[in-house]
Image 1 (cartoon, one colour):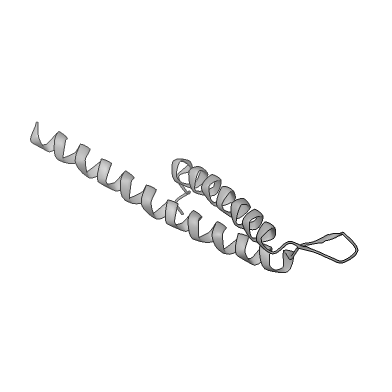
Image 2 (cartoon, rainbow, N blue to C red):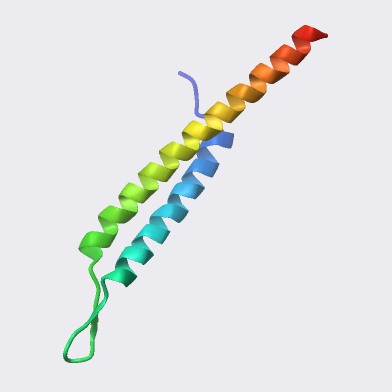
Length: 84
């Protein structure tokens, strides 16, 4: 079984974590409500699913783009070595 390339997995995870955090913060801030007694109520029941979807979408998208970049770089290097 082939192990995942850390040069693909680590940046994808980092980008996914940032997107998940931003998705959570934006959703949480956008649904804050001040109650009559002065307390602020938020909606984590909406923010958590939004952050999970943002994490997965960005992580998978970044992984696809990075894999395609690595493949094109490998093809270019192979073409260059063949032409010599």
